Image 1 (cartoon, rainbow, N blue to C red):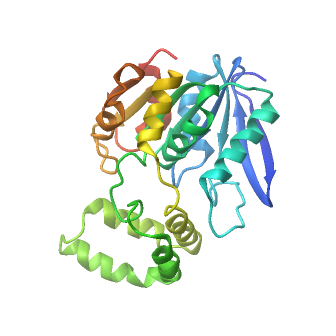
Image 2: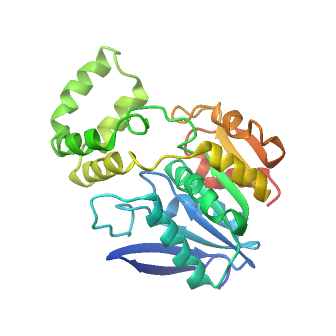
Length: 269
């Protein structure tokens, strides 16, 4: 497979169809997760940077891209099983992880589980270290999320009210943009509903994460956009605190999308 070729693989996992795009011809394995609302195509700008060192498996998240997810929610254990399937299919024991936004949260939950096997970790504006906004706060219990999940299906009726609040400048522009985009169609509302339910138990264990990084000596590079309105810049310092030798913070002149991973060129891969 040449640097420019893409191989498509579908993994059958407990009735779910997990879509993977495989690129590159490097000797090392890299497993990558895009963020919420993105697909495997997010990493297209980064592929030329990765192709010689890594064979990269990019995985569409549940209800995203070509992944078909039929369960009402997902768990940390689901992603663990999917990663193990990739390792078996690719024929690797050791590997590296890459994640953007919610994909970064996925990576952070998996580090304590795969610590001895990990070479490097790349985090692009990762969610899960500090949880801003209603969609990610950890204190909202699962029972309340399940009880309110049905409201999401009719949440498009709130769009005129959200517009009025925005005009009054009573909600932030980024929140209004999120509401306008993700509540407008049935497919996007289903995404919001499932992630709203699943996030109750999809939380990062920060102390365990840090202990694993330190004890297994895992090199972590975290990229943060100076113009990012979603992930606060202090998440880099929160992660780095007490494990300074193993975490590099790279600030970039980008927003939340971090240029599709092109910022990886700023470090020595």
